[in-house]
Image (cartoon, helix red, strand yellow):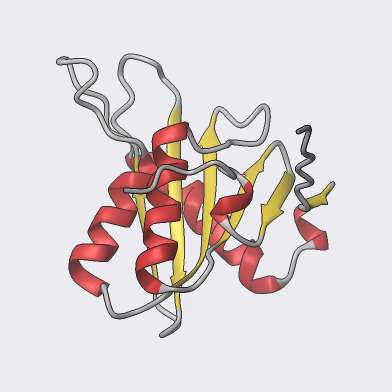
Length: 151
C-alpha cells in the first residue's frame, strides 16, 4: 500500500526573521566553529544548545588522523550535555559551519542521536540549521529522520 509522508519546517531567508533567542543560539554555534579541529576537511562545524534552565553550551567538530575516529559538533555537544546536564532538558539546537556557503544539516548519525536524546528527555528539540544568512528550522529531530532506529 502506498503511503505519503509530509514534513513541515520553517525557512527563514534572513536571520533577522528569527526570534532573538534563536539568533543568539546561531551566533553561539557560529562562534564555536573557531574551536573546530578540522585540519583535514577544513569544514568547521559548531553546535549550540539552549537548555530549559536558560544555560547555553556549545561544541565543535573534531577530526582525527585515525579516520573515522573524529566526531561531529552535534554529537560532541549532545554527549557532553547528557553526561553533565542530563536533567536539564534541551529545548533547541543550532548548527553552523565555516565556510558557510549553505545551511549546515546534521549527518545521519547525528540525526539519530538527536532523536535518542528527544526520546530520553521525552521532549522534542527545536533544530536550527543555519548558513549563508538563512536558516531552516524543524520542531523535532524526528522530522529530519522519520524512519528512526528503535531497539
